[in-house]
Image 1 (cartoon, rainbow, N blue to C red):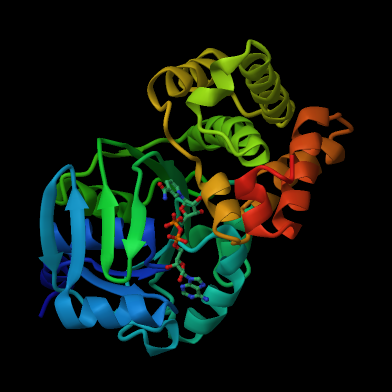
Image 2 (spheres, rainbow, N blue to C red):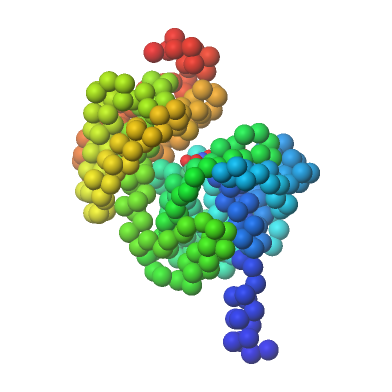
Amino acid sequence: MEDADLRIIVSQSPMRIAVLGAGAMGSLFGGRLHEGGADVVLLDVNQPHLDAINRDGLRLVTDGHDRHIRLPALRPEQAPTPPDLLMVFTKSFQTADALAAVQPRLMAHTYLLTLQNGLGNRERLASVVAEDHILIGMTDYPADYRRPGYVESHGDGVIRLRCADGIERPILDRITAAFSAAGMDCQIDLNVEAAIWQKVAFNTALNGICAVLGCTVGQIAAAPEGPTLARACVDEVLSTAGALGIPVDRAAAHAAVAHALATHGGHKPSMLQDLLAGRRTEVDAIHGEVIARARRLGLAAPVSETLYRLVRLAEMLPPRDRSSGQAR
Ligand code: NAD
């Protein structure tokens, strides 16, 4: 067989995708990519979730469309053939352990993609593969894990990504084609770091304030001081990004926060949900990474630091005290 024929067959075969961390987002993305024709395996350590998926299929409800998707769900160390793409969707603080379990299964051709929230995700992937096999990005598709085997999502979203080193490689076209076949909006964005930082600014403000107060997003607007604090936080985070030379869009970031305050009134951000459930939050990857970068630049980040300290303190308090308001 000629090399050209082989290339055609390889490019036409379904993309092999392993999703490392198949909770809310990993199940949504893995399930939809499977529906789009990709060869997907879910990898997770949540045994009841794995068992339910392998027994009944993954129950995925997107905008009222309720179905059970049949796809394999395994523990990371059982990952089968090395994938073309390993999509990492653990929480940021779970990434290192998860990668350690799959590292022996990765091959030279495997690319790693992170769409996780926060900062430092690229560096975590760089501990197991070379920079030229890392893709970074962000997404605002939402997802909620309801119970083992069952995940919900609603509304549209976008995925923005690029190769970590900025080089445009064929893998980008394969990934965007896989998402397109799944009916998901995926765009190659050479300026994706701006989108990542704008989302970090949004999360630092809204997740932080809601987590500390135990309030919904809409309740931030109950007094003028709430939106003022959120704007100060966004400005502070984006000043750090600006000092790093990242061309962020301040107006867009402020508009995103204002839109959330106006339209996501009853939403409890994930950081608050984690605190209420007694789980560890991603405050280190969100506020903590911003503070560390600001410090390295000699900048002050007092709003992020205050929110960081309060969330860390809240993580140490019993969940019942927080939900009853006694911790305030
Ligand atoms: P999640 O907690 O629902 O899912 C994480 C999954 O990782 C869990 O199923 C957990 O069992 C698994 N995991 C933990 N340790 C593991 C290990 N060692 N090996 C394999 N799997 C392991 O979290 P999520 O909401 O899906 O969020 C994942 C990431 O995506 C986070 O960084 C989050 O900030 C980001 N994100 C979430 C949303 C959302 O709407 N949920 C939107 C955008 C971005």
